[in-house]
Every structure is written in structure tokens, then in C-alpha cells.
Amino acid sequence: MLLDIHPDKAAYRPGEMIRLNVSLTGPIQSDRYIVASITFLSSEVTRLERTVHRFAGETVTVELAWTPPVAAPRGYGVDLEVLDGAGQTLAAASTALDVLDRWTQAPRYGFLTDFGPDRASFDRTMCWLTKYHINGLQFYDWMYRHEQLLPPADVFEDPLGRRLSLATVEKLIDAAHARGIAAMPYTAVYAASVLFFRQHPDWGLLDAEVRPIPFGDDFLMIMNPASSSPWTEHLQSQFAEVLEKTAFDGIHLDQYGDPKVAYDGYGNRLDLAHVLPEFIDLTRRTATGIRPDTAVVFNCVGNWPIEEAARSKQDFVYIEMWPPDTLYEDLHRRIIEAQALSHGKPVVVAAYIDPARARNVILAEAAIFASGGYHIEMGEPGGMLADPYFPNYVQMSDELATILRRYYDFAVRYENVLSQGTQDATARRAADVAIEGVNTDAERACDKVWVIAREGAGYETVSLINMLDVTDPEWSGFQLKDPTPLTDVRVRCYTDRPTQRIWWASPDNESPRARPLEFTIGSDATGTYVMFTMPLLVYWDLIVLERAAIYPQGTK
Image (tube, rainbow, N blue to C red; front, side):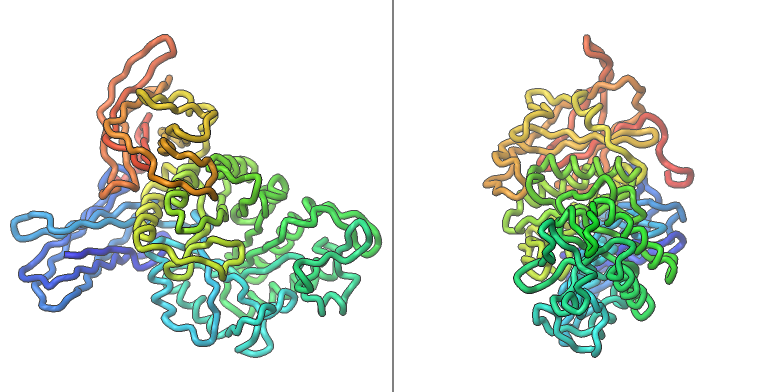
């Protein structure tokens, strides 16, 4: 028997009923019994049960409904079993769901690039994204021109000659909203066509040689995004028109990483690290003045200008990774730096990895999720971003798609100890974690077990990422074989605070459900420690040390 389960939406609002879609492939010769256990972290919240009567067809779909507590943000796990009349398990599956006040609390950002007039199967696209809990979509290069976002007619050609349709864009927005997914329109803060620049040459930026600044070969020109510039006034009016005439949920702002310093037409020097955050804040005033619930996000290309942009009024931090940030450890470092600079805002990274390098993808996913971050990579069904020009996405293998679905489920299920209400503690705590016979030295990039630590109110999490036999420290490199798995992993964690419970979970297991770990308390010359044994480490294991009760009233 084949079994699948997924929620009908990518995320839910407080008080909203959740519907879980269960598909069984038969035929089923006798009655079957479905039991779904819904958990918050390591404790069961409720159980849902249904009977499936015998049927001769190949597939039957069953719906399970549940209204969770209104608390948000809150992630839940769902573990499903199909039982026969004797109570024997015939099939099992799992999924996750979360309740959020706003999607930007946990921005699982994805992408769309196909806006052709012949596009169909809108809900099929959103259903696929829902299985990965993608709750926000960047509509990449959906617009007519960079300086005129809405087209003069429904069907049009974009600057690269692609045939697009505004009606298709609007249908995709509606389909996304029906699945609880936000739709964000791509825009560029200072890009305009060559023709538009020639009509408004004094609106552009100039280099040190007093020359206009092009982007690409006769493709775009760089305009002046300063608050006093007519270009800024023009583009803000374009944003307003988009939000007034479409159902988009905000504005996604892009830039190209250069220039960093330029001059206006009067010879005034402009430090764009200061200009761009002002543009972000102005965009937020424009957007929320039309609809208060809109979101604004800005692309820090190559992590620039992160210090200023992180403190701006954008809803979350978005970093496009470029050299020299090519190491797995750079993913962690950039995420936690941005969290600190932004005072705890969510962080999305764009790190483009060819899905043919599946091991790299999995290690990068573990590093990003363990750091409390998010990764923009999923979008068009089966597609993964492997290039900064999003239409060049690459199809995943079925095997990788299945693995990543487990990882996304895992990140949602345990978001309350991985991201929500947590902060990084790696620099302070990683050296306090030791594994018998295994290197955990934080200074070595490869051939070790990498420790990432986070903490929240009453608990701390320890993520162990298996880098044993990983010979290339770069996420864009090529890992020839899987890390060497470890069994019966004996872990010693030094701590000066009492520990009530320890539990363990992994997205690499058939069941991601949390399992309690027996532990002992000891001491040596270094200090007091807890000692426990984990059954298995493949790529990523999550350990939670509870110092106090961390379960809100009514969840246990």
C-alpha cells in the first residue's frame, strides 16, 4: 500500500481549521483504520482517526480536519499509520504544519518564472509547493519592463523576448492565496531600459569618470535610487500601481551588488550602502500606505550592504551568497550575523546548487535549517534554483525531491526549537559538545562532525552535521560520496544548568518523531556534563536539552 499525507495549505492563521489530505493506493480488500498523531515537539497534542472501507479502485483520498490552538508561531508534526483489523501497521507516513500570524515569521520562500499565456494547472503547481510548506513566492521577471511594471496589454514580451501574460500572473496569485501562499513581485531598485534612460539621462547614476553605468550589453542602465531622485519617485509610483491593481502581497527589491559608490548628475557622491536602506524604508511606507499587511524584502547581493539593510524596515533579511562565501560554514556564519544585526529577523539565503550534486544540497540544507535560516530554492514543480537567473532552474531527481520534502517537514515540525524564539549559541557552546572517537573541532572545515548550537527559553538545541569524509568544504563543490554514517554515537555535553529531559530527532530517519534519550550526569576536571547515546547519525541529527518545561499549557 502506498500512502501520502500533506496539509491543504502551506501555513495557517490562528483559529483556522487545518485539513490533512491522505491518499491511499490500493485496492483495499477490507476495512482499514487511519490513526494520525499530532505532536508539538516531543509531546502528542491530539489523535485523529478515520475508517477507510474496502474499495476496488486504485486510489482513495481521505480528509482529516483539526483546529489547533491559536498560539503562533507554532510548528506541529503529523505521524500517520494505516492499520488492519488486527491493529497491525500496513503503511506509515508523516508531514508537518505550522500556525503563523504572518508568513514572514517563517518565510519559506520559493519562486515562479513561467508566466506564459498557455500555462495551465495552476492549483497543481501550488499543491506541489504546499507539500514543501513554501509559503511565499517570488514572481521572478513577471513584469513588462523594469521601469514600467504593468504591461499595456494582457499578452506581452518582456525585455528578453519571453512571451508573458498578466492574466497568467493573476491566476497564479489567486491559486497561491487559495493555498495560504503569499505572492511577491520581483522589482529592481535601479534598473531601467536603455530607451528609458535616454529619455531621462539626468535620472541615472554616473561612475567616477562621469559616465552612465550600464548593466549587461545594451540591456539595462543603472538609475539613481536616492530619496531626492526623480527615478525614485517614478519607481515608487510603479509599486503603488502594482499594489492597487493586483493582489500581490508586497514588493521584492533586487539590486546587482554594484556600483557601491556612484555620482548623481550634479557630481554628488552617493554611498549606496546608505542610499539603499532609505529606499527600502520608503518602499515600506509606499506599500503599507496602500495595504497595511504588505511585506517588503531586499536582496543583499554578496551580503552587501548587510549592516545597513538588516536594520531597515524590511520584513526579513535576504542574502544572495557569492564568493568568497563559498563554504558550508559561510552559510551558518552569514545567517547568524544577519539575525544579530537585524535583532532576530528571519533570514533567507539564496545559494545556488545544481541538484545533480545532491549531497551538497543535503549538507547545505542541514547547515541552513540548523542555523535557524531558510533557503530559496524550490519553485516550479520539481525545479530547483541552480543559477541566479531563475528561469535557468534545474529539475531535481525524484530521490532528492523526496529527501528535501523530509527536510522541509522537519524544519517546520521543529521550528520552535530551530528558529522561532531562538538565538545562536555556537561560539559559546559548540566546544562543550564532544563525541567519543570523533573530531568536533570547530576550526576544521572537513572530516568532522560539525556542531551548531541554538538556545531558547528553557532549552538548548545541538545540531550535529556529519562532515566525515566530506573532502570539499564548499557548498558549490562536488561531494563524491555520502558522509560516513555513525552508529551508537556517544555524546558528552558539558553544562552548568540542570537538564530535565533530552530528546533526539533526524530528518534522515524513516520517522522524524522525537525520541527520548536516557542520559547520565557526571563531572570531571572540565566540569559537569550529561552523557547520552544516539542510535544513528547520517547527515543531520537534532538534540534538544530541556532545562525546564517548554510546552505551553494545553499542548501536553
